[in-house]
Amino acid sequence: IIGVEVLVDDSITPTRQVFDYQPTINDVQVANASSDEIAYAVSVSYYDQAGNKASVTDFDLNYDITLPIVSSVSINSGDGYTANAVVSVAITLDAGSTDVGYGRASNQSGLGDAEWAEYVTPFEWTLSDPGNDSNKTVYVQVRDWAGNASLTKNDAIELDTTGPELFVEIQGT
Image 1: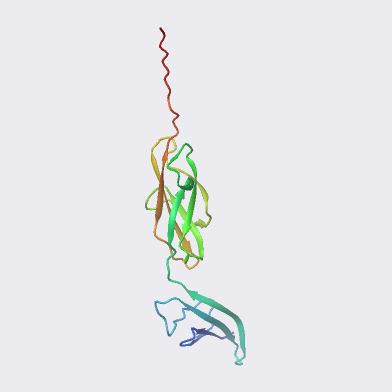
Image 2: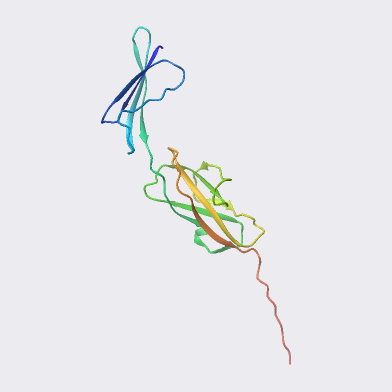
């Protein structure tokens, strides 16, 4: 193999680029690159010294710049109180956010301790400082397959693990 040809067709201005063969990937600049989302048909071919062309792969590539939108976050189906520090968190996505692949959650607003994982809803979550009864907030964010991350959304619930105290006084005559 001495050469590689990459053809990117966006149905407006096809782009053809030829490279000397290297075992690494070259960047391909698209002639009609825009800020709009668009689907590209990509074809990669290889050439040998005799000029023989071998088409190795054809695939579609979608240029996606739209952020997924988290419409709401709900802890324990919207309950205001819980006696258990382990809760169920459900995420509702905007109708247009169909390609979400990852999610992350945190008890901290900046999500600094959160790691991306496979998107699942609802999911179990342990509230912060479970020994301290108080208002607890869970922050979530999702990411689509193209790497676009949503804005952070949250919900709160009051953790109350202390049972009520009852004092009974019987007065006699």
